[in-house]
Image: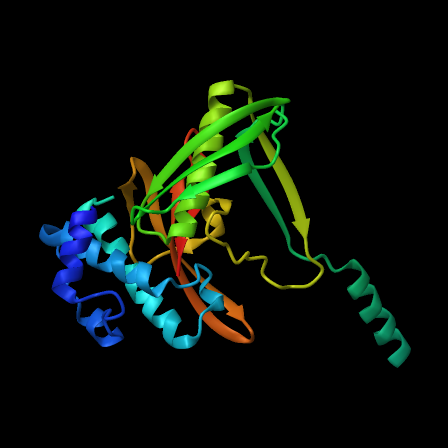
Length: 82
Length: 180
């Protein structure tokens, strides 16, 4: 998992350089790439570190957090990835 | 005539019955006396996973517990779930009796009694509505489904989505695993 995270980081030049909301909307989740994509998305979660209570987020963060979580859970119900 | 109408109105108010909601849940018996979590240590070094160790006094006996949870949730949520997992596993090991508790909550007004659930809450499945994403799926060998809630928050309608999963060894209790 750590290796995948590092690989995803290298690909996306992460740390503070996470996806914009528009990039997240255009993100194309695929079961065949689940491990790498999930690592990338989880890294974004770690960097963003949103409050788990959506009511405590401003509008922009709520939208981003919602999109991010919906995308991450997509793998669970589509690809049976846990 | 006015006085008669007022009298009728007052009577109606007195006899009006608010909505009542009965919530029931099955849980491991309260035969065990469970203390609070102490000496909690969280290991969040691995992304997507939280491992916890803590002490718990059950029936006067100290137990040192270790638990972990892996998933998509944020680290603090994973830690809360890890704590719950370890505690539930201990209680199952100690044994006991499953009992069903029921509570009836009545409200005076017509407000629909819908709770704004939080991550980590244990609820009945029908406390949250269906999602447009239908059906159940497996997550950590547990039956789960998506849910949607439409609630008013600060005078605005908000739509919340989330995931609930069936609590281990229960047919009725579901835990809110994530919410956004």
